[in-house]
Image 1 (cartoon, rainbow over the protein chains, first blue to last red):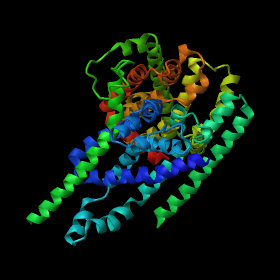
Image 2 (image 1 turned 180 degrees about the horizontal axis):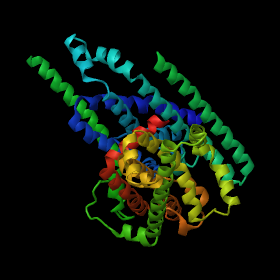
Image 3 (image 1 turned 60 degrees about the vertical axis):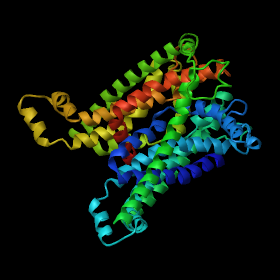
Image 4 (image 1 turned 135 degrees about the vertical axis):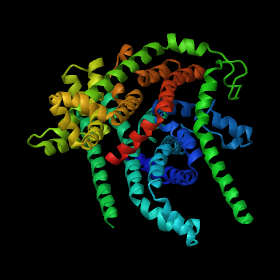
Amino acid sequence: MFNAGYITFIALTFQNALALILALACDRQMKAGNFYRMIFFIPPVLSEVVVGLVWQWIYDGNYGLLNHWLVALGFNNLTKAWLSDPHSALTCVAIVHCWKGFGWGFVILLAGLQTIPKQLYEAARVDGATSWQVFKNITAPLMIPVFVLVAILTVLGSMQSFVLILTMTDGGPGFHTEVPVTRILNSMIGSSRFGYACAQSIMFGAILLAISFVQKRISQNVRQT
Amino acid sequence: MLAFNAKKTATNIMVHFLLISVSITCLFPLLWMLGSSLKTQGTVFSDMSIIPAQPHFENYVTAWIDGGFGRYLFNSLIYTVTVVLGIVLVSSLAAFAFSRLKFPGRNAFFIMFLAAMMMPLPGSFVPLYVLMVKLHLVNTRIGYVLCLINVGLSFSIFLLKTYFDKMPKELEDAARIDGCNRFGIYRHVALPFAKPALAVVVIFNALNVWNEYVLALIIFNSKDLMPLQRGLMMFRGEFLTNYPLLMAGLTIAAIPIIILYLLMQKYIVRGVISQAIFQ
C-alpha cells in the first residue's frame, strides 16, 4: 500500500506537472502541437509489458544502457543494479510509470486548454497582463475542473498499476516494490489461497471506490464554486 | 518592437527545445529496442550505437518460429477481432434500448449497469477467476473473450447512449413511416448515425484488448492459447539473457499497435478524452 502510494505521489506531482507544462507549451502554436501530441502519446498506447521489459534492460546492472552511459560520462561510482537495489528500485519503477503516463495527462489537459476562448487571452493582453498573470487569473481558474479530473484519474490509475512492476521487478528486491495488486496475484497464483486473495481484492476495491467517491465529492464542490 | 520580437523568438526557441527534448525521451527507448533487435548476442553488449553497422534479421526469424510469436500474434488477432465485434454488437443494442425504447425502470437499469462496472478490475479479478473456474471456462478462448467483452462494455454503452440521445426524433419517425420496425430503425438509422462514436468504440477497445495482460495471466496456462502480451512474458522466461532476441519479440508486439495508433490517432485521442469524462 505504501509503495503504491509512493508511485501515485510521484505520478501526481512530476508526471502531471510535466504534462501541464508541455500542454501549455503546445497550446501556443497549433501546427507543431499536433505533431508533438502524436509523439507524446506513443508511450501510453504501448502495452505495459513491452515498456516494462525494455526499461528493465535499460536499468540492468551488468548490461544496461543507463550504467553504460554513466561510465561513458565518467560517473563510474554512480553505477549500480538499479532495479535490484532496494533504495532505487521503487523510484526507477515510478519514473517509468511517469514516462508512460504523462502523454495521457497531456492530451486531456491540452483538450481542456483548447476550450478556453481565445478572446479572454486577447483581452488580457490588451490590458497588459504578463504571461504569469494570464496563467494565474485566466487559465488556472478555468482549468480547475480539468485539473481535478486528471488528478482523480492519475490517483486511481497509479494505485492500480502493477504490470510494469510485474515485468520489471516482480515485487522485489524482497518486497520493496510490492503493490496491492501484485500481492493479490501472489496469494492467488503463487499460493492458491483464493479466499484470502478474494478478501484482499475486495478490500482493495473498496478503498479504490472510497477514493473515487471522495474525489468526486471534491470535484463537485469545485465545480459549484 | 524589435526587442519584443527578439524576446518572442527566444521564448519560441526555448519552448521548442523543451518539446523536442521530451520527444526524444519518448522515442529513444523504442529506437533502442528496434536497434538492439538487429544485433547479435555477441555484439549487443559492445556495440552501444542505436543503428548497428551490420543489421542481423535472424532474431526475428527465431522469435517468430522458436519463440512461437506467429502463434501468439494469431491468438491476439483472434481475441481482438471477436471481442471488438462482441462489444460493438452488445453495446450498440443495449445503448439503443437505453436511449430509444421506453420500458419500466430504464434509468434504474442503466445506472445499475454502469455502477456494477465501475468496480475497477484489480478489485474484481479474483471473484471473476473463481466464476470462470465454476463455469469451466478457465484456459479456454471463449472464457477470455467473454471476460474482455464484459470489461469493455460499460464505457462503450455510455458513449453510444450519449450519441443515440442526440439523434433527432424526426429521423426515427420518418423511418417508421417508411415501414421500419424497431430493429430496422436500429439497423438503418441509428447505427449509421452513430458511426463516429462506433469508430471510437472499435479502435479504443481494440487497443485495450491488444494490450491486456492481467486476465490473460490468470485465465491461460496453455501456451497455444496465449495472446501476445502473455506470450512475451513466457518468452522472456525461456530466453532470459538473450536480449537481442527479446527485443525482436518486443518489436513484433509493439509494431502493430504503433501502426494502428498512427493511422487512427484521432479516434484514440477522442476515446481517451471521452473515457476521462465518463469517469
